[in-house]
Image 1 (cartoon, one colour):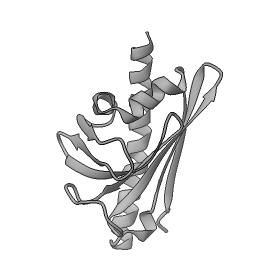
Image 2: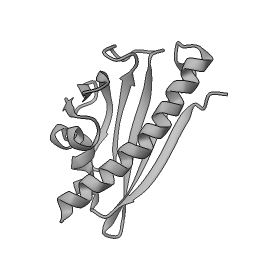
Image 3: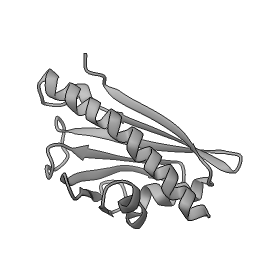
Length: 147
């Protein structure tokens, strides 16, 4: 069975405003999440996330509530415009914990994709592994900024 959501949570040794910048500002996002990023940071704004070996993924900003919630909808296949049936929703929730930030990431909507069950399962598995790697890259990137 295809999971409908992926959830990951990490604790980052930096305050929420610093983590917010790293999660939402293109110059930071392009350093830990792919190779480059363009983000129009407003609900309805367009975003493009580029990985040199995979191509560019288009996204649409859904919610911007600094410094606690940022979400976007991104599409497959590479280059497609996000719409119902080809996109999943990614939500970043930031919560202060002392001097640190707990970052909770949820990607949902895999079951609603217009794809075969096998393709949905493969997409969910790829992203499950991808979030493990990307969030560790995010933690390392923030750590290097704080030093």
